[in-house]
Image 1 (tube, rainbow, N blue to C red):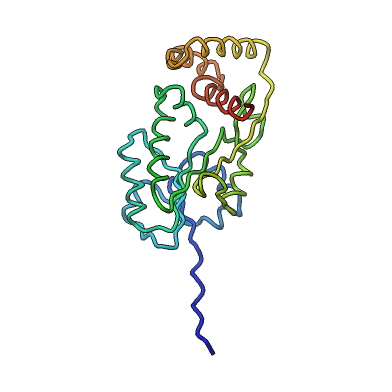
Image 2: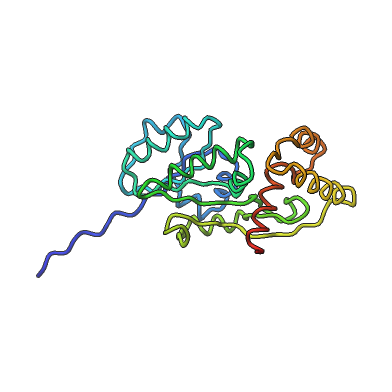
Length: 231
C-alpha cells in the first residue's frame, strides 16, 4: 500500500494590533473571536513564536514609516505563510497629493507588502457597524459584518492574487440643510485647492470640532473612488 503524505497542519490565524479599533469591533463576532485566538500587541511580536502555518493580519499602524517597515520585515523574516496588510481606501488620495500623513504612510506599507511573495493587501473603506454611523453624502465603506465574513473565508481576486478591495458605495442623508450646504461648499473649495488639498486643514479642524466627518482625505478619497468607479 503506497504511503501518503500526512495532512498539512491547519493554518493558524494571527492578528497583530489587538487594540486596533477596527479589529476590536470585528472580534465581537463570536465566529471571528473563536478562529482568531492569537492576538498580539506591538510589544509581543519579538517574542512570539511564528510558524510557517501562520497567516498574519496586520491591523497595527505607526505614524513612523520606519517602525512599520521593521514590523513587516520581522514578519517576513519569521517565514509566515501569508502576510495580510489591512489598508485603507484613503490611499487613493496619494494620486492627488501626498500631504496627508495617514494615506501616505499606509501607501508605503502597501508597497512593501506587495513586494513580498506571500504579501496581501486588504483595502477597507470607512468601517461601520450600522449605516447610520456614516457621514452624509456618498461613502466608500465597509461593514463589520462584511469584514468578518471575509476574514473567515479570504480570497484575493485582484492584483494578481495579492489584493482585495472590500468596500462599496453607500449614500447617506445629511444631518440637516446646513450640513448639506457645508458639504457642497467644501467640495468647491477642494476643487479650487487642486493638488494642494491640505490648504483646507484649518477648515478641517473646525469641521471636526463641530462633529462632521466627511472632510479632508475622507472627502477626497470618496470623491476619487466614486469618480473612478463611475467612469
